[in-house]
Image (cartoon, helix red, strand yellow):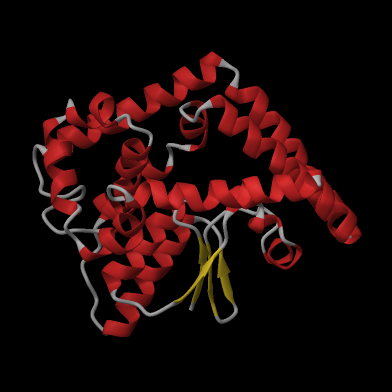
Length: 265
C-alpha cells in the first residue's frame, strides 16, 4: 500500500491517523503542494485533481479522504476475520465532518503576503508544466483557472463568513455530542475521530485555538485526550507540536525562497 501525502494536508492527516489506528503498514511518499510537487507530470497523470492524499493498494487508487478511510476500515475488517456490528453513527459523523471544506478558512487566515506569494508560484508551476507535457495542457489549464477563481473567492467576505459559520455549527454539534460520549461516535475511538481531530489541529496551527476550541470545554478535554494517542503523534504531533511547527514551516519557506532566487538569476 502506498500513500502520497504531506504533513500540511488536512485530509492527509485524516488518512494517516486512520492507517496508524489500524496498525497497517504502508509506504509513505511526501508530495508538497506548497512547492508544486503535486503538479509534477508523473503524479498529475495519476491524479489530475492534484489533491492530496492519494492511496494506492495494487490496482485500487483512491483519492477522497473519506473514501480512503472507509476502504481502510473494510480492509482491516477483512484482515481480522471479524464482523463488527454496523455503526451508522460513525458513518453519519464522518459525512458531517467531511461536509466542511477547510480550504477557504485556511486561506483567509493565512497572512496575505504568504498566500499571494505561494499562489503566484503555483501558477508559474502550472504554466511550466503545460509546456513540459502538452498532452496534459488542458487539464493543467483547468487547475490554473481554479487557482485564479480561488484568489477571487478569498477576497469575498461572504464566503469567509459562511465557512466560519459552518465550522462553528460543526464544533457546536461536536461539543453537544461529547457531553454524552467519550469520543465522537461513542465511547470507542472510531474513523469519525480520525477525520475530526485534524480540524482541531488546523485551528491550532492558525493560532485560533482560543476562539474556536478553548471556549468549548468538552472539545478542549477531548483534544487534550487524543493528543496522547500514538496515531496523533505520528500524523500530526511529529510535525507541529511546539517548535516543530516552525521547523516544518521553515523548510517549505526556504525551498520557495531558493526557487524564486534561481528564477531571478
